[in-house]
Image 1 (cartoon, one colour):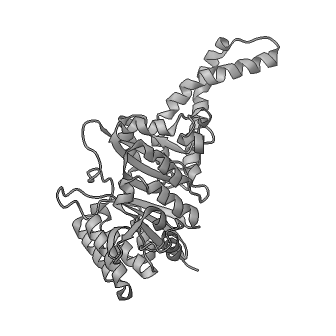
Image 2 (image 1 turned 60 degrees about the horizontal axis):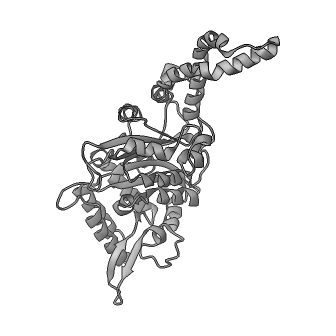
Image 3 (image 1 turned 30 degrees about the vertical axis):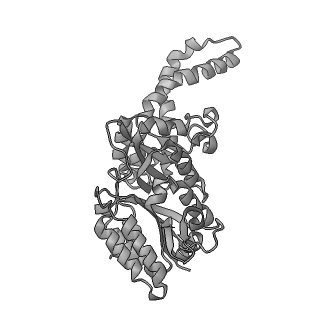
Length: 389
C-alpha cells in the first residue's frame, strides 16, 4: 500500500487550554505513522472563509455535520471580530500507509457518539445538545479529513497560505503583550523520536504548566552546520570545565601508575593543555547526537545539508518565559534534576536529556535565528503527495 499524507489541525480552543501536548501524544502513540512536519498558523479571514466553504460543500450526504463544522471554522478560526487579532491553529502532518483512515479513526466523530474517551474528540472535544436535539455547545478539538481526496484539497489550500498566515504567531488574541513578555526556544532532542511513542507530546504537556503560549512549532532535521553554530558556545565551557573534571582522574591515574600520591594541583597545567582536545571530542559527540554525523566526517558542503536525526522546535511566549521553562526542564544532569521535571522524567544523561531550552532572552534570539522556526517545512510534503493548489 502506498504511503499517504494525513493532517491534523488543532483548534484554537484546545491550544489556548494547553491541551496540545495531550493531543500530539495520542496521535503519535496510537498510530504507526511518521510525524513529519508541524507549523503554527494564524488564519486570515480569507483562509477561514475558504476552509469553511471547502468543508461545507465537501459531501452532500453529510450536510448537517459538515455545516456544523463549517460554522465552527468560520467562527473560531477567523480573526477576532473586534480586535482583528489572529487565533492560533497548529497543523500537524503524518505520513504512512493508510494514514488518512488511521488519523480519522483515532480522532473519532465530531458528534461524540460514544463519549468513552477512546478517541481524541471523546477526550478533548464537546458536543452538547438540548432535549430537542439543538446544539448548545460544540468543540470538535481538531479538524481532520475523512478521505484522501479531502486531505489533498485541504492541504493544498493551507499550503497556499503558509507564508502569509503561518510562522511565529506572536500577536494572537490570547498571547500576552508587554515589556516583561519573553520568547524562549525549546528543542525536543532526537532521543524523543528514536521510536514512536507518546513521549514528545508528554513533554509538551508537562511544559504546559508554565502557563505560557506556544507561538511557533517546527519539526525538522538539524544540519551539521546548524548544530555547530547552535552549540558553539559549549566549546569554551567544556574546555574550562576540564581542569575540574580531569585533574582528579589524572592525578589518580598517575598515583596508581607511579605508586605515590600525586596532588591534583600538580596536573592543572597538563589539564589546561588537554582541555581543547577534550572539548573537541565532546563537541563532536554532541553534534553527532543532534544530527547523526560528526563534523569531522563532513565536507563544508555536506554540513549544510546533512542531518538524519529528528527534532521538534517550539517557541513559547509569556512573562518570564525563559526561567519558567528552565525550571520545568530541570538541571542538565537528569540524575540531579527535580522530581517531575522533564529531564528527570525523560532524560538519561547530561547529553541525552530530552530537551534543550534557551538560558536567556539573548540566547533565545540567537538560537531562533539559527533554527529558523518560522521557516515553512510543510509545503514540500504537501507538494510531494498532492502537488500545488
